[in-house]
Image 1 (cartoon, rainbow, N blue to C red):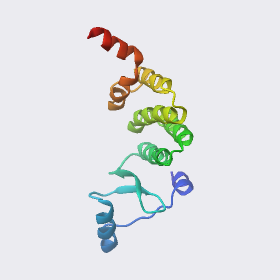
Image 2 (cartoon, rainbow, N blue to C red):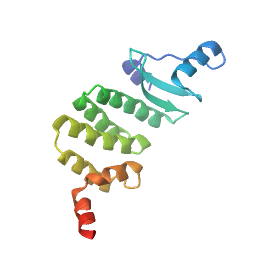
Image 3 (tube, rainbow, N blue to C red):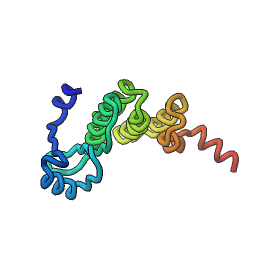
Amino acid sequence: MVAFVSENFVPVRVHVREQADEFKRLGERYGAQWTPTILLINPAGEERYRIEGFLPTEDFLAQLSLGLAHDAFAKSNFAEAERRFADIVERYPDTEAAAEALYWAGVARYKATDDPSALAETARQFKKRYQKSSWAKKASVWDRDEGSAATARQ
């Protein structure tokens, strides 16, 4: 974990008691209401991703990876975002981040190609994995078969 963090981030720690004034200043600036709050901040000081509360190592790494993927997406680097999101699904398949990553991988592919079949394929993947997640529900509208069935029922 240390290697991943040092390769991808510039970690800064502000302790709630030992650095109370700095913690208060940054807490107010970024709306940090609980500890730990991990913020992924770009060089301009803009928040790109937030993790609140303690997590087991695998879940924490998945969330940090999700932050990097969302940052690539926000920069319109959709190929990089898709690669990062897909990597989360492969490396951390049993974490909560995996379902979100699967969803956003499909969105990133769609944004890169403007091909709606990327969304339909993502909806089909949700039928095999993470069926009970809120992300599967969000992706269900992309399933042409489901959409056709809904139209036929009306």
